[in-house]
Image (cartoon, rainbow, N blue to C red):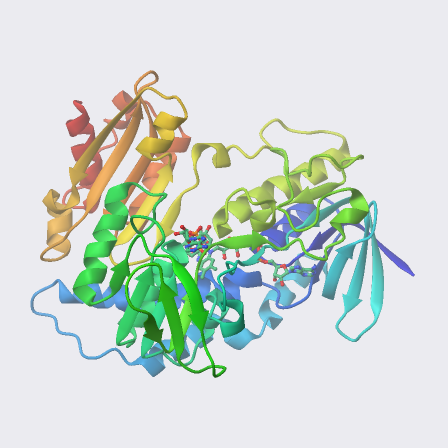
Length: 468
Ligand SMILES: Cc1cc2nc3c(=O)[nH]c(=O)nc-3n(C[C@H](O)[C@H](O)[C@H](O)COP(=O)(O)OP(=O)(O)OC[C@H]3O[C@@H](n4cnc5c(N)ncnc54)[C@H](O)[C@@H]3O)c2cc1C
Ligand SMILES: NC(=O)c1ccc[n+]([C@@H]2O[C@H](COP(=O)([O-])OP(=O)(O)OC[C@H]3O[C@@H](n4cnc5c(N)ncnc54)[C@H](O)[C@@H]3O)[C@@H](O)[C@H]2O)c1
């Protein structure tokens, strides 16, 4: 028997949920298929638990910089309990209720495309449901951790983001493979919560290689002070773990082997498109689903297939997936009505997505780095400023260390990118996002006066350094 809906969404992560919501607001009916938990990676194994684990470490850093305040040991059990509450103890009934309240039909099971506008769902009870979409099918299946083909690595059953964010035990000795966001955030979380030996193995020359260089350098200084060992230009050539769950030996391109109790692999993600039936609609399996700026899959006749969030490989961030989802839901509803507003396009992605790395110091950026701007052919001037010299930052704590950078398009006198690094800078980021995405002319931005004594005075200092 076929169930018919206007829109069928596969994957109930933040992106999938938001498509359904917007499509229904636009007057359509929707079903969402989810094989695990409504809420997706973000709610249970990524953003939410990782930030719950990092918050006490961030706060401890702040307290430690203010004379007159003292901090005892972090109560790790209490932190883990709060993390468990933050992930609703892996119970998605609240999210399912939200979906049903949209209202959209929630279908628990694994979805698979089966030709044009048809989705087969292997339901949790071993049965099958065949769903048909009148308007659109939206893929929102996210991504999974990528484990590189290092000899012995897969056999060692290393931790990925799933295990580290859900752990109830902090390893004594942790080796971390990768120097990106997951590696940095989780190395600091595990070390701050009691790992005695934390070693970060970075293939390249610095942490967070895609950000402005000072961001990774400041974090590396903070790691060194905390006793986290960062080894750059280091490749893992082989891994041994004779006993499942036992000691791991990591053989490196340089130096003696490293012994650890656990190994975390944080080397990026792959789009979750395996066994999704992409071949039945003429698309390649196991690759991100290419989309246009209305999030419609390219190369599918009839234009009924869309992809939002991690699965399209554009930007692997929750807020960007949700932004795409809002556009996608609106586009599907508008196309069903026969009208299409020009504003319904992914514009933000083209500027460079805002991102915060929730370490201490916090690192955040929006738009292009200086290198990216130059590589893209812009005529660029970049200015930097020491954030510790801003009164508001100095007042936040002794020894405040931070840096900011603005990348200016010299032809249009607008900002192409902004990076802040320092304690408590995350909340500054949206001001930069508005300036970059709004293409606010610098001589206009000059009249946005930051309050004294806030860290926001960094804006004034950057503009003064530029010459305004
Ligand atoms: C450790 C970690 C921390 C992170 N922290 C942040 C952060 O602080 N801020 C941020 O913006 N981003 C963060 N991210 C990235 C963020 O988690 C992802 O960008 C986001 O989850 C993507 O949302 P999504 O809806 O596209 O996919 P997901 O959240 O992955 O959801 C996809 C859903 O689809 C389901 N699914 C997959 N295949 C099928 C199928 N065939 N049938 C039915 N259901 C299916 C899955 O079970 C899942 O529930 C983090 C990532 C990691 C790994
Ligand atoms: N706070 C946040 O916004 C946040 C937090 C965590 C994750 N995320 C998102 O999740 C995604 C995944 O994060 P991630 O840290 O896994 O990926 P990433 O792309 O940020 O970093 C991957 C790292 O692994 C390295 N690497 C890749 N292959 C390797 C190999 N074979 N050997 C050694 N090193 C290798 C890369 O050089 C890089 O340093 C990111 O796109 C990120 O934006 C966001």
